Length: 125
Image 1 (cartoon, rainbow, N blue to C red):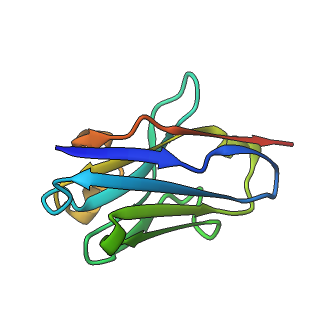
Image 2 (cartoon, rainbow, N blue to C red; image 1 turned 90 degrees about the vertical axis):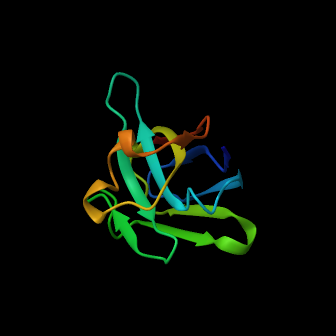
Image 3 (cartoon, rainbow, N blue to C red; image 1 turned 60 degrees about the horizontal axis):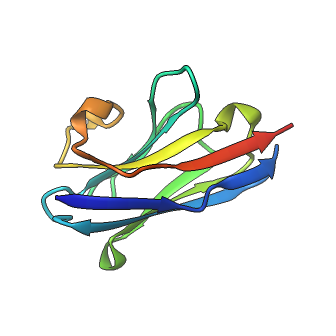
């Protein structure tokens, strides 16, 4: 079992920044591959970024150059630094944990076993 708790969401103006955090506990050794997903009302959940246990990083094209994912393994924490935010970034953001994944599978929600309850990010124009 892995427990995930997100924090750091809020409301910002376009062009602003947010730093999301995910605190993990439980079997974080077996489920060491971490991802950030987001979902807006009426839309599919989409992969935003992911990071492997060894530090390999993946980003969706829509956020590349604006978002940065990182992890602190000693603290069992994963972060998502979001800058240059746009209204279309508005969504509930979820942290998720998976066993080690092939690169091609990082953005598929079905590959992840555990999910946090989410933190809301709202970007106004």
